[in-house]
Length: 159
Image (cartoon, rainbow, N blue to C red; front, side, top):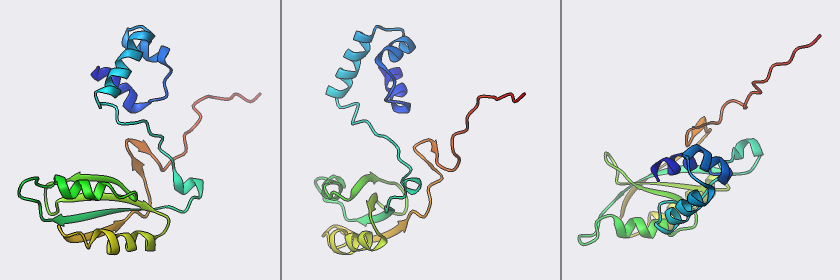
């Protein structure tokens, strides 16, 4: 199962037949493994990485460091769940070090993100402080290089 998950993590668009050949299984076996992985909650979804800057879309991404006061009975889970429920929030991660939660959000403008932090995130009872970092340019994301266009490796001979 782990081998299938690693392959899917790198390219979820591979045809079932190719996956089966790579894993030495039949397409039906691989399909069953994928169904089980989804049912067990191992596969959380399928995602396409888009270079929104290159697409010319108005999008701003921010990384927010939060210091929070955890609940005695539930630790960080309750506040993290509350924050994760906001539509603007892409990710919520429990961190070690100088802050407790890392929140990644996306919006259309810097002001939209700033207002979200000021009006919805900071006023939460358990939030002690926030530090917002705006992403200015993406060089690499989730293992993919965003800086260089893919080059055509084929060679051409001109006579």
